[in-house]
Image 1 (cartoon, helix red, strand yellow):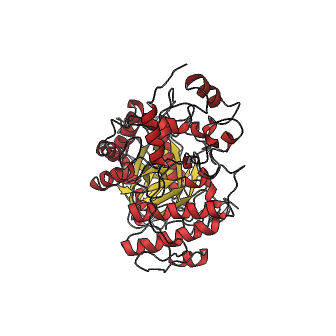
Image 2: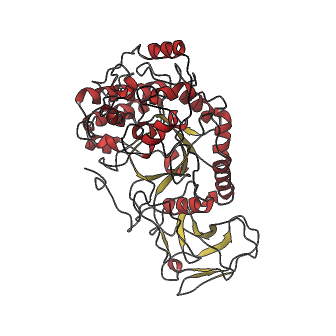
Image 3: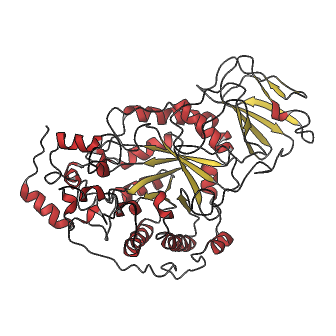
Length: 515
């Protein structure tokens, strides 16, 4: 068994400092911004009348998610270590006993002094994300574990007072803005209400209720009004301190107790954005209309084109959102295929990486990001700032669909194609290579009878592309040399637009994804 010695005087002072609080005055009973703006009210009809999806989001298409926190210290199984180490019978419970000892003597809080982030460099991270082609970045400000990665006046268990002793979120915001990357954040505070409840079932430090890190310790996944008010106060604090342009939430915010408070949050956030002269995004997974916020699907994709902008959040790693030992990572090709499929259906991809506890990003995940960046350097014209066509694509390969399905890569052929448009340009992204070229059946003579093709070329190649339009479709040859490693973008220029954004195939999924 490994043992970790932490001087008792140091730990005593650490715990003492973490039990003191200084709160700022935040009025959660009002949705008016600090400047008094209250255009938005906490009802969906009002929000739908006033809310506009930001162009930076609909044009950006690709963002980076960052799961980094205390859970990177044990680096075992996944980012839910903080909960599962207190779940009797779990792999994490057994591992914790064997590695760190009894839960009364070494609890989750005792990992915090080991989370020193000594190699963290926000500027280097952002340079990497920019090279990867990301247009926005979303670090986790607080995960279910209740540890704030920001300078909180309301949560004494934070990265400024303990652990790294740095305002991680503040440093990332400054670095992102320096690189011209849109900055947002995620908060999973809602889940903290019950996340540690397993520790109430046997002797553990969770039973010390003076340790506020462990939240409400509520049974099941229940909520109370006082917990909901605390959640809202902390979420207002994040908005006030960091002015994020996107705030991402996990699933629990659709709980009936939390929902009225969440509606207040949206109204307050949108009112603040009016004062900032900016447009912002809220992400939820279920329960809220897709006309007033952006629906997010975890580790999966929609099989349909959506009327309103939506997003997939997924991770480079297949096993965990945070860094864990022996992770298995997706290939750049799989991720690019998913990105292309998602964009063709009016969506964005938010791709997660998990840094180590010391603040470094693994070589393998770095390599994946850089490979995606190389592809976007060549093919980004077919992704950024594009719109959907009247259909998202064609081909017989059945892509994965629904949440928690994207670990398995789809085997595509050159007949599997995804479509995007921009002005008079039509992009057909062919998902595999065939020396004989391909046939774009959706562009037969009848389908675009009122428009004339002026040019066809492949992005990244100077070689001429032979083409002919028939009743069968648009037959296109491929260059002799591949311009990139995977997913090949044909740019087809017409003398006019060949379809308006979101035509007959698009659907409105409002309220189909939750209660």
